[in-house]
Length: 141
Length: 298
Image (cartoon, rainbow over all chains, first blue to last red; front, top):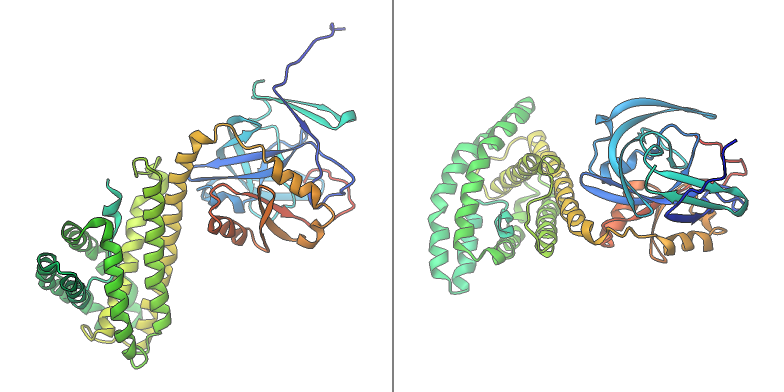
C-alpha cells in the first residue's frame, strides 16, 4: 500500500450544466479555445476520460482556417453508434494553458463536444471530486 | 508592403479611366488627370487582346477555357495599370476616388442592361461587394498597427487571393465593356456564365479576405489574449437561461459577455453574425433538443 501523497493543481473548475442535457445534472466541462492557422473560437466541452479523442463539430474547422477534409479520416465509435471524423493538429487553450495536439472534427452534426485523452491527457492533469462537483486542472502531466 | 498598395481598382476600362480623369480635373488635379488619360491607350490594347475575344464567344463550351486563359493573362496588366494609378493618385484616397467614378458611371451604363439581357442589380451588388470587401480588408489591416503581411503566408494562400480577385475583376470588366459597347454582346448563355463567374469569384475573394483579416487579428490579439478569457459571463448567461434554452433548441447561439449576440439555425450564420458584430473570437455553442437521457459520451 502506498503512503498518502499530494497532487498539485493550478486550477479548479465547477461542474456545470450542459445545454440540452438534464438541467438538474452538472458535468465536468470547461471552456476550450480551439486555435487554428487562421482563427480561433471558444466552446464548452465535456472532459470525458472515456473518450479516446477530443472531438469538435467539423463546421468549426473552416472558421479557424482548416480544410476539414484534408485531415486524416477516422471512425469514432460510441454507445449510440459511430461517426466519421478528421484529425487535425490545432492548439487547445484550456484554463490558461496552450496545448498543441491532434483532435478530431466530426464530418456530421454532433450534439456535444468533448475533451478526450489522445495527446491531451498525457500532457496535463485532470482531477475530479464528484462529491462536491469540482474539477481540477494542471497544465503539466 | 504598404497597405495602400493592396488597393486594386476593379473595372479599369477606357471609359472608367476617362471618368476618373474627369473627376481629377474637377478637383483641379490636372497633372494627375493627364497621367490617367495617358493610360487609356494601354487599356485599349488590353481590351482588344484580352476582352474582345470574350465578346466574340458563341459556343457556351468555349467559355470556361477562354475565361481562365484570358483572366490569367490579365493578371500582370492589372498589376501594372494599378501600380501606375497608385503612383499617380494619393494611395490612401485611391479606392474612394475610384469607387466614386465607377458608381457615377454605372447609373448611365445600366440603362442598356435590359436590352443586353444583363441583370443590373447583380452587377451592382458585385461591385459593391468588391469595394466593401476590399475596404474591410484595408481597414482591418491598417488598424492592426503592425506589419501587414500575415503571420503564416502559406495558410493564407495569397496566390488564391490574387487569382480570385483577378477573376472577379476580369468578369466585372467584361460585363462593363459589354455595357459600354466596347466589346460585342455575347449570346445570353455566355453572359450568364460571366455573371456566375463574377459572383463565384466574389464569394471566393471574400473568403480569402476574411482569412487574411482573421490571420491579422488573431496575431494582434494573440499577445493580449495570453491570459485566456474565462468566459465567466457567458457561462453565467447559460446558467441563468437554462430554463429558456429550449426555445433555442436546434440552433447555434453566440454569447459575448452577458449578451446573446445571435441565435441561428446554422453554425455558419451564427459565426457570420459574430463577425458582423465585430467579434473576432466568438463563443459559439449548439443547443441540442432537450433530452432526459443520461449523457454517455457519443
